[in-house]
Image 1: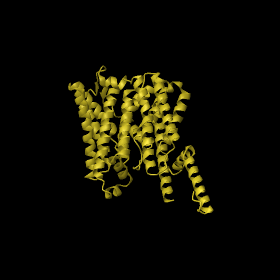
Image 2 (image 1 turned 180 degrees about the vertical axis):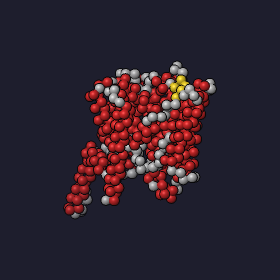
Image 3 (image 1 turned 90 degrees about the vertical axis):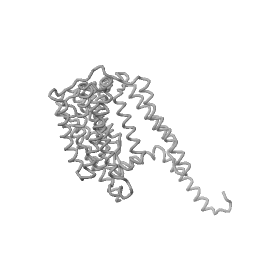
Image 4 (image 1 turned 45 degrees about the horizontal axis):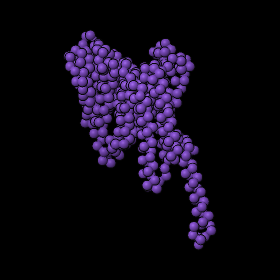
Length: 420
């Protein structure tokens, strides 16, 4: 230290150094907890409500019937999650824009019918039938976008009309029989009913999220340090990665005590990861959030709003078609009941319950995954208790209403916090 420096200046520098050390210390666990509390108070709840809800649901049903948490029952639950979960993943794309697609259930039913008619009745290879179903989904989504972009038809009306039209087309192509059985020994049916990952592969995949978190965390730390910015303490980064890895490895271990991790659920998780990357790391994803937050501001900033709507609706309908294909493989049949009942509502409810806002501009791909697990957990638990299906509708409706109320209150809190 410079000896000519006045004593009061030296004392002030020392005090500042001690304050910086305290700030860096507070950036540890206490700082992380304080930041989390501040986000919650400002209305940024994230996945907290659905995580708490899932814990409560699991606890209640496991007390009422211990079979609920049995490994094989959880494996069956994951099989059932995949079909509607993929539909919900498409719903997330349009909800982020503040729009809706009411026809995903009918689109999945039509896709299932196309598989049965082309593959079984017409004798075409299953690959061609799958391609035809996915192409039909993409064309339907493009039609919705055309009606919205060019004709100004609200998505609610356009997709409601599509719901009726696609349902009628499904009944027409299935014909008077109304049902087509798929070959039980085919790879498609086995994929939807019995195929699970080898133990070594499921454990290996469970390690990847933690490794990715560490690699990305180190890269972020390096960039921030080079820019002389504060960084997350290394112990926090490694602790979070370790906690995630231990949780996933235990889940895989527990599922492997039964039949194992279904490949079909693995496909759902892979699609969630891909869509999450697209939404958070690409220009397309940033444009989705921008248009959903403020369409006019996005247009003025140079975003091609019509193209964003086109891509979102096409992706939603294509994923609905894929969900229909998996539904056919799960049931080993294409029937008039495919895509009907509560399929459509469950797909929409899963996205909302998982945390995607109905007002647009907020949500994530993981909300579809968490939301559909909540809904299937309720359905599975009530089935184990031999309760009437009417209770499932009422409870699911109540959970959906609570999710929308929480979303509305959180949005109000964010607005008031922003004005403050």
